Image (cartoon, rainbow, N blue to C red; front, side, top):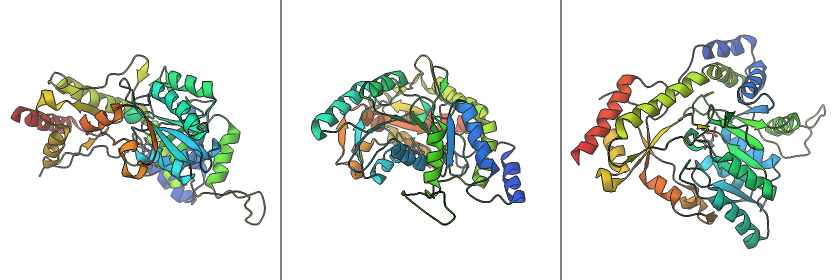
Length: 379
Ligand SMILES: *Cc1c(COP(=O)(O)O)cnc(C)c1O
């Protein structure tokens, strides 16, 4: 059997181990310490030096804290892009609030501004309440239509939570994703473009918000010699060991973006002349980190479905995955309101994520290429 080719696997640089050793040598084996502080500073200076970043235990916890900071409470409504990973929406439920899902548009596959406005108006009409927050997602690293979304958010005075879990290193009009909303969230899970083995961050607009996030993430301890609490706390802080890994990873982020983009270029060059293979181009002024290389398979032209391709590659020990199943189609969220057509649903039906790690060799990519061409040829 050929060696497994993963969809997206961790890729260490050169300094991570050294930073981890430093944590051991200084005994900072805790959810605080110099790596945590430095990682936060380095993240802010990479994304936008005017931002204030809190390092947390996951992207999911970052979204949860963003909702709390945005004032989301029980029985509130929160608008969320439907085409996303469940972690974008789950924290809405943690807060006892109700998600309102919105379809994607075709140019970025992300939240559709037209349906977004319909969802805001619809929620006000149907429930007598204005949504408390909007969660937009830069899915697979492609920035959503930030100007359009922000204009609508401003018109209705609703804060925007920017889920940039998949988009570190992506740019919207030369500005980094995670710096474009009221709150930006990042993930450093093992499959993301850089990893801390597990971790996340919340990017805030001012120091006060950041300090509040840190306060909540460390059990909301009041300033007292004994343990004193006036608010509900969480254990959401990032470990100093993990932050050491993150610091090493952040030093190589640009290489990782270039490697992922070049995977995408390879697939596009090899497959775009095949009838029925469709790639998502970058709209003007948007730069995707191409976290995952994605392709739409139109079976009426290819003669094969994306499932045929996925299963054939699996036999070759190559991991691929359908595009994320939209939240409004998930059994868990079946009671939620939805505004849109079938854009997200069609993406899910036709879309496939190809192996996209920054550590793939040319030999790996050639193996993927041969396996795909083999399936198409057989039809
Ligand atoms: C990975 C991911 C998250 C959650 O991040 P974790 O660090 O795994 O909790 C949230 N949103 C999106 C779009 C993601 O891909």
